[in-house]
Amino acid sequence: MENINLFSEISKKMSEQDCFLIFPHLHPDGDALGSSVALAEALRLMNKEAWVLVEEAFPHNLDFLDKNMSTTDKDIFKGKDYISIMLDCSDKNRIINRYSSFERGNIKIVIDHHLTDNLNFKTDYEVIEPKAAATGELVYNLIKELGVSMNKFIADSIFTAITTDTGNFQHSNTTALTHKIAMELYDVSGFNSKPVSNLIYNRESLNSIQLEKLVIDSMMTYEDGKIVIAFITNKMLIETNTDMSETDRFINKLMTIEGVEIAAVCKQDMGDKTKVSLRSKNYTDVSKIAKKYGGGGHERASGFNLDVLPYDAPYIFVDDLKKAINI
Image 1 (cartoon, rainbow, N blue to C red):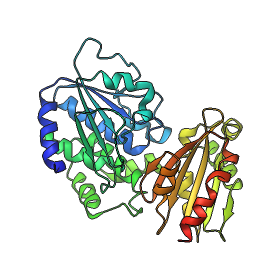
Image 2: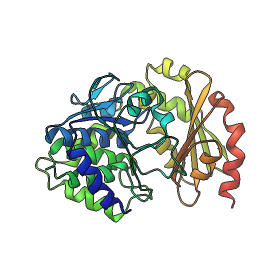
Image 3: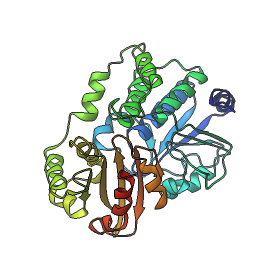
Image 4: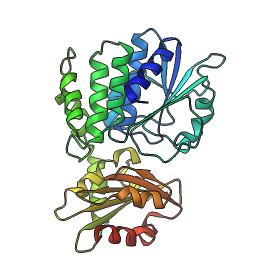
């Protein structure tokens, strides 16, 4: 079934119900949060009750998106029927502490742009479109299907989703449709991309700059500089009085280094575990490497988790990176 037809069916079901709980993935990025609050706002404009269920505060550079949109109350709709909508992921393990709330929805929907072989839970509707540059593109089309007139907040949120997942329109996932949607946002009264971009990209704290220095100093290179790996540990965060939400931009910094084809950042996660983020510049499909270790994502941007400390992680996967760039 074509997504446009599926969105038509989904929007009809959504129009018939009053309560909605929206689930972005754990450690949400601009696409997950931008898509979530845009959809919540659209539903509220339809006189529906809609909340984004989260486990953590919005990252500093995305805090402008949280205008009474989010809740940590897993029972906010206790005793009521509601539709559950998972955005920007299709793996229950990425909402595992909220999954029971998702499961209680009488209709369950997944909207994502990450390629997946199969879902590990039951849904009523799935829109998974790997060709979309961001989940924000899909949510934009769903909002149009719902017949909602977009306001400035929705436009700001959709722009946030798209600009962050395309590397400010520089990544290879950027398409003509991406630019078309961005262009259409300018038709929304009051929308201006410049203030939104400033909020996202141009207000780093001095502490985060100090953390960036530590991350850069931790770099290791392989294959004549074609591979670069950096590290973020809890010790670094404590030393600079920062938190992990301030680190997403660092991998993009590594990708600006001339000659780099693959960049990896190993982030300490929950004690002795590590979250590995991978990016490639021109030709390497890093999603294949991520899948080998139980993760996933896109050809040029993927990730996975390992049960080791960050500095031990490269010994597990660096040979895979070397083979990938030499194919």
